[in-house]
Amino acid sequence: MQDNFSLKPYNTFGVEAISRYFAEIHTIEELKEAILFSSSHSLPILFLGGGSNVLLTKDFEGVAIQINLKGIIEESVDDHSILVTAKAGENWHEFVMYCLAKNYGGLENLSLIPGNVGTSPMQNIGAYGTEIKDIFVKCSVLNLDTLEIETFDLEKCRFGYRDSIFKQEGKGKYVILEVTFRLTKKDHIIKTEYGAITAELEKLHIEAPTIQDVSKAVINIRQSKLPDPKITGNAGSFFKNPTISLSQFEDLKLKFANIQGYPNGNQVKVPAGWLIEQCGWKGRQIGNVASHQLQSLVIINATGNATGKEIFDFSTQIINSVKEKFGIELEREVNII
Image 1 (cartoon, rainbow, N blue to C red):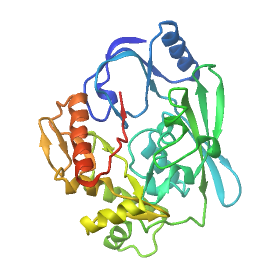
Image 2 (image 1 turned 90 degrees about the vertical axis):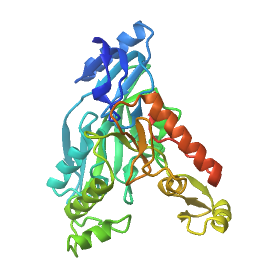
Image 3 (image 1 turned 180 degrees about the vertical axis):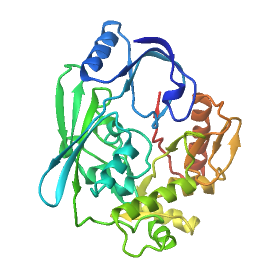
Image 4 (image 1 turned 30 degrees about the vertical axis):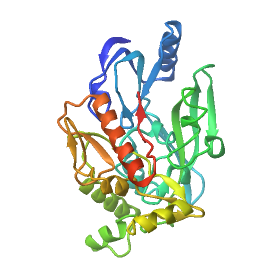
């Protein structure tokens, strides 16, 4: 246990924040010890994975715990599918690459998403037509009250769009230890109809794409429009794509003929990036913070000197702009501490 510890290297925004105590854990026993320490001192806990979905707006007067559990286990189901379990501290993209190297299908559209495996079920990460829930089997969690290990299956996780039980009534009650996915060994389902994957495959002159080809296309697309957090501090998409009623969308279409939307029954998902761009935020910088010039959905630590509060205040201005122009209230996707 270390005290007065800088969390700057542990968040992808690269903002400075000091934690009163810090522990990097490699075993479940170490995790329990850190939890008991915080409990005995009546201190709050902040769990950190890859630090890619958190905005630290102030110093943390508690115990920051870096989950560094490592390991991957495989269990064959049949000729067609396999169960792959990864510990919470495994880097997400490296885990995806591990599976693709073994020709296990299902994760390829989720290539190059920042963060660790343990945080992937929390917000049901998704991209290019795939979400965690599509290949999720179960996860093992530690109950923070009882310090007992429990298993959450697909139904118990109650996944929604960028949502799960871990962001709702289970928030702050559990820490994810490992996640199990069901992947395909052969006859993979190739998803290329979302985003710019088809166009990118054409650019690569690939007509019959493999799962590895799809991954390469996704990586190319993400690298072309998303900043590398190792170079420019960011947390990827800062806002969720809002879902509005079909009637509200139709009303907006009368006023904004080119508004984008993806209907789903009586609701329509509207790209947050498009809304933000229409309000003039794309590439705009205020002080140390900016909206990325290629993807307005991404807020960046433009100078490397931004504070968490500056980034939060910048995001508030974007939310207010979109609400004023479109009557839609954007919701932050990152966790605000």
